[in-house]
Length: 454
Ligand code: TRP
Image: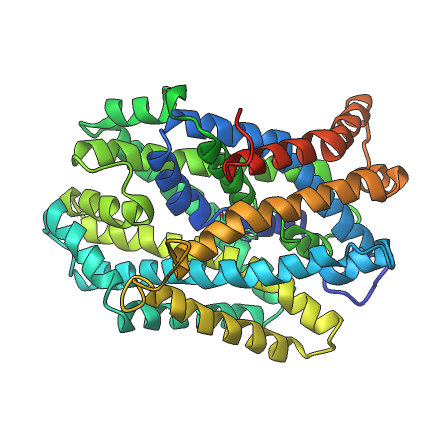
């Protein structure tokens, strides 16, 4: 399976591998940690419905746009735009992508580091038998303890280094093929367990019965930011990955499959967490700590809790890893292709920068908690700026580029419909890239920052 244009470039070996790496990039803390706490803070079902709407109305077209650009050019995000529109001024999208991938990688690694702490606690039995209240304060004390979260952040980034320096096929693809199926199996087992909890009915009501009175411009913006974050869109992450796709990979099918599996995992995470939240009398609005306070409460009541807890946090850690390697790959591909660095040197540089910012984010729960910008700690600032501003702006630019600048023959050649229905679908997707996505993103964005009111 050689790529026609660039025979030397690395390529994912199998069709399963392509799905595993793409879903591996999409499924991560965004689904299991971020979605539940965002839904919890923003009214549950109404947030989820809005999120699903954005996933299919905007997410899938933008994902197809990234795939088309990436596979057609077969290069990194910065070079892709330069190649398609030399001197067209679109290169800024590449820089936005590279910059925000480092911001996201930094705060993401802090949370992934928390999962490592919880694996350690589960294995050592430190969490066993504690009451929900005690678990609550344990998390706060840990997050504020400075050196420990910082150490886990650095260790997590070293794990990334170990995989990334091995390269695309041997590192990224091999790891994803094993981890993704395992993750699905374990999530389904937890889901069944949660459905038998006393608070199951209340939890499911919260997640599935919409109350639209909670919806405001800010909530709509968060639901859209969540869709971008969870699907790994807007930074050129999927432009980079699809540059490793073979000509035979069906792009539209891959996009729909990724969006569906990703949403399915987010909903599963909600079904696992909200019954537990209501069973243990916790607050769904707890924010980023939600998963780390609620789940240990479930585990401490389960028979064999320590084993389940180890398994769960281990999988959450592994799911984070398949996501962070995709973020790093954005700048690594650029360092290698354009700056002619070695794979190893490029990986070192990327991980080194992320370590510096990552430690600052980790400390923002401890000694840097009073250091705020616009009322946000460094951790929250990185999250807010990247998810709610840079990803939507990047996504809007990418979809305008694919819809208006790229020749239609390139788009349909890459999407390559094989049936009448497929051709209609390409028409719909192009319409969404041209009009629906840019207009919606702009409107939601302006409403979210309070410039317009619905
Ligand atoms: N989608 C991942 C998650 O849900 C996070 C992620 C990976 C990401 N690559 C990205 C987010 C690129 C934005 C852009 O956990």
